[in-house]
Image (cartoon, rainbow, N blue to C red; front, side, top):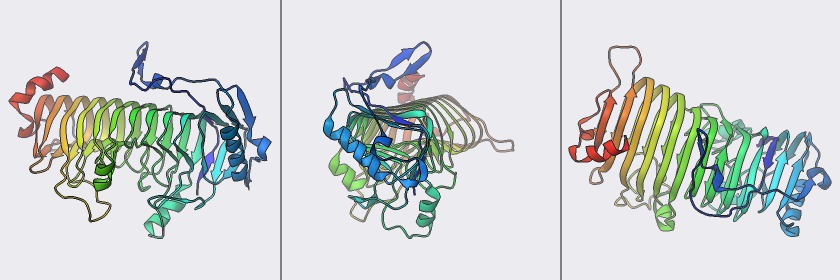
Length: 432
């Protein structure tokens, strides 16, 4: 069941260029300018289509009629769909291009309603495929997925299909999600897949720490994604960059690239910033900076596995603070399962050029765990200005390394020998 507390504005922005630009407003650096905003000249209300915000009336037909009208009339500059204050019950619905959706209070979703998507998934609550010029934003209204029903079915193994995300955008460009609260998603919260030029900013994402697979934001085989100024506290990775799963991701070959994660705060029993483990299409040019984590499992987790293939390179994490974390930094070549038995065990991932700098942690139980893959050593790992203090006790946090190679400058506690490469120390110094 989804229950969305509707104060969400889906604004539409028009994409004028498909390139990566960083803007700086005073001391506030932002990448959000990659999707400029457009005013809507045409405005309609959900009440014009029979919408009733009493928390009981089913408004699916009203939403679908309104969006159908936007799609087929094609007003110049797009259309703004306004949802007045109230509690609106609805099934899943599809967006269309060049639209703005504003709702000011609560949107509720019915359980287990909607068609199955290819690959055996329930359709996400808010879904878009092949769109451009769409934004989901508002005045911190809430979309509540009522995930406990779905989580219990998952625990009891009674689900027929994969649980739905709250928002899934596929093959789309020029998308903005901002000023929205996402609560209790059945599965991943925000999932842009095969998308480009996506801005996710000023969002709050919350779910209980024991809620299964409730990732916050998962850019998947997408490029030019900007994630900024958000709070995330869920039961799985806060932000996880992905790009396909084993032989299927290898065959499609669509990487995730130019991903920025900036000024994100949160808590999770898993990872704050993650890459993987589904990385078969490749992941490159990821920047995460000004991250604050507390009461979490892992600060940074780069994860992949045999059978994944793909290239993971040019990953930078900087200005990260963590408190009460089990493992500060984890790089693992043995993480994640496989979709079936058809994966190729000889398809080994290629991992290089990971830079982790200006990182501070307190009450960190283990400094780092870095295990690559035999015959596929992870190289070019650079740790610079990293201090991870342990909890009170006789043993400080330690490092455990295997099948990796890199350099470390000003790192405490003293890192493992695999991070003492003389030939790589010069390039690491240039990143400090």
